[in-house]
Amino acid sequence: MSTPRRIAIVGAGAIGGFLGTRLALAGHRVSALARGQTLQALQQHGWRLREAGELHQAPCATVSDDAAALGPQDLVVIAVKGPALAAVAGQLAPLLDAHTVVLPAMNGVPWWFVQGLPGIGDTPLDSVDPGGRIASAIALPRVLGCVVHAATGTSAPGVVEHRMGQGLIIGEPAGGESARANDWAAVLREAGFDATASPRVRYDIWFKLWGNLTMNPVSAITGATVDRVLDDPLVRAFCSAAMQEAAEIGRRIGCSIDQAPDDRHAVTRKLGAISTSMLQDVQAGRPMELDAIVGAVHELGRRVNVPTPNVDALFGLARLFGRVKDLYKN
Ligand SMILES: NC(=O)C1=CN([C@@H]2O[C@H](COP(=O)(O)OP(=O)(O)OC[C@H]3O[C@@H](n4cnc5c(N)ncnc54)[C@H](OP(=O)(O)O)[C@@H]3O)[C@@H](O)[C@H]2O)C=CC1
Ligand SMILES: CC(C)(CO)C(=O)C(=O)O
Image (cartoon, rainbow, N blue to C red; front, side):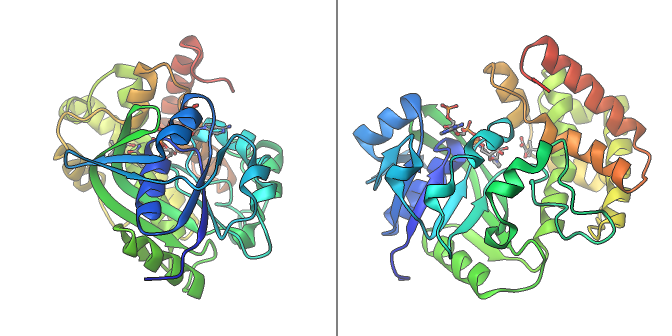
């Protein structure tokens, strides 16, 4: 087993608790920056994760809403929803020392996505990092990119339910191999994840986003599960058209997608009557993760001069829906 590490989970919800419990069970010293009922639950019960009907529990090293109480870490996993990221980024300084790695285990375009991307400029995307506050708080050399291929939820504060999948892809923002990506992938594998170190994590992020871009907002606006979204030929064609636009952006930024929209739809359709995470957020009255999943694609299209009329229409409708429901503030 690898030596025990100091790991902080920032946002101990469905994904944070999934990673936190497994890493704590694997013998690491796993703390949580949490708040409210989740903080109380972690203080009382530690990490809790139900898998295949069995509840696993592990001690939570330190739980606090103050990062100074946790102190410097080897790894900081950020697993909040997109709209909460700017606020937590400003709280991270006490967790970071010279070697701390930051792993954002989140969906959508991350704040660092355009940093160092040739031909697009280093200016952070307004949609995900207005004013560059997140990039200032988390220096790029600390970051390992991440894609989560899993479905989890919380049945109560601090109680995570694992539904399917345990895939994690991690990698250097600039691409290529690194000892630290290999090392953390090994730590995650030992904790039970199907973790791989990828030499092209920016592409991996874009490829996952390609599905979320349409399924999530369309389901959120309509209330339909993904099978119903895809079984309507007009809606399916609209989704395909938006995905073609995103694929063209991908070609311009070194993330060419070698898949047709219909092939991706076939994979998603097999999931059956599932509610996307954005639909679940709407139903629970939680803020929509629109900026990282749709707004960033709309903005990237402008940056690389790719017309995106379908993505724009989708963003406009989802944004308006979110504003009317008071679930989108920008
Ligand atoms: N769940 C899933 O199956 C998957 C999720 N993802 C992505 O992972 C990311 C996390 O999603 P998920 O785990 O589902 O979200 P959750 O809402 O379950 O968890 C987010 C957690 O962050 C906490 N939080 C928010 N702001 C703060 C703060 N300022 N201080 C401390 N804690 C805070 C929330 O607390 P509170 O409850 O108090 O708001 C909540 O516990 C998202 O980007 C999502 O799209 C990716 C793949 C699959
Ligand atoms: C439903 C699915 C698989 C595609 O959008 C998803 O990843 C999500 O809900 O976030």
